Length: 525
Image 1 (tube, rainbow, N blue to C red):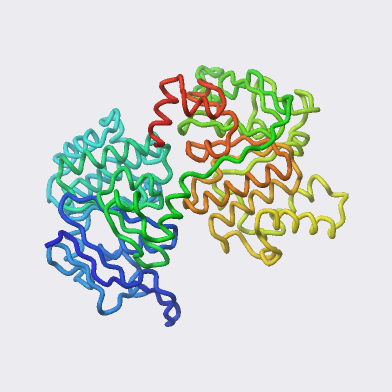
Image 2: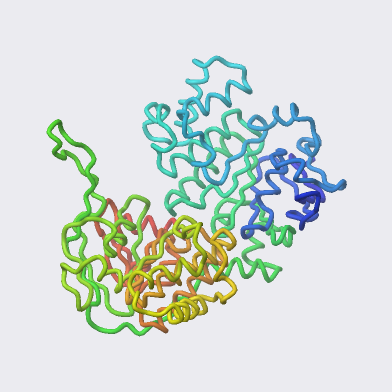
């Protein structure tokens, strides 16, 4: 008998007494003891809804299942089970790691209290006993200075540390099954690898079975024994990991696999430096003495120098906190800095307004970067109203429509708001907002990190086409080495605010010299 068996699972959602399209449509799969099952697909494919159904965490009665649906755990039916039965299984027999730990952890409670609550609820132990077990769990999940971190709040931890806390909470009661919903999506490649290694180690030590949900097939490849591919609520292919990658049967699976290796388009790099950065420093005050003098700084960018040619792409890579984004923001005047930033035909003392006309930035998260109260027309047009106030309304609208068409959107989007679009469409809008001012340098700060792999490939292809058409220079900031390889002509590797290695893309990927660079590339394979 399988440890977990899902049969003919169908999930729908009703709104105002009307049934909407099914989120999950007749899905069946099983999970054996000690097995890792990967469930892969794009956003909206039904992966998370399927996982939440197992523990009855959907918003019932708005959510509903058809009568033939069944989920059994050790032969026990979970669908429509009594709430007290499900409470005994959640967090005890089946652990759950949610996608975004910062949203899942309570910001008002210390780490120790949040993990201890789970232990005390299911094991009926004292707070003192729970504290000892919390420390052991944090050590087991590889958190440094575990005794000190117990007293920390979630916001005081890095993304990787928060994810380890979530794992500690999920395995606190030695569950038979661990469900991990996109546990590595927002993490750097080296931290991703650490989390995967940790889960495999815990699986072996505790004898757990794991359901690992992701939109990233390359991550699934590293951890799963078997893979199920979902699309539009349906299970379209299920096979061993080796067979999925060596002999995929469905066109959609083939597309997912090919999207992980976008091709580099050779653009015509023009001679002469377009941008020169010399001795750039961005130090943030960390500690002041009694007299108000700064005694300690966070050296976010510490003496960085490089040159960028016209129509060339510089890839900047490194882990979170390496100074990548701070460097990009400083070039467009969003941070105070020392040193020189010289854009062609501008002096080192040029104003932020002058820099803004030459260089624009596309931020990592388009949902937070776009004003939710403004229409798409207002968002894209805003820069024209500031910098080109002499243009007529007709000319401004014409420019807005041109750039929207250039990024693959039509005039129907003008009166809509950001929340009405998908992540990929919002990123296109953010790119259009930057392009409308006709910059010569575009700084792309993690422009694909929050997107599904197929959408990532589309956005990268769009950026390549725009660069060739407009003869743009790019600074492409990312922790995704595959995306950097597809875009960059030259690469700067950053660590602790410094560039520790610089060279052509071919040299960095084939003959990296610095051990840190070697570790980044190895983790991305």
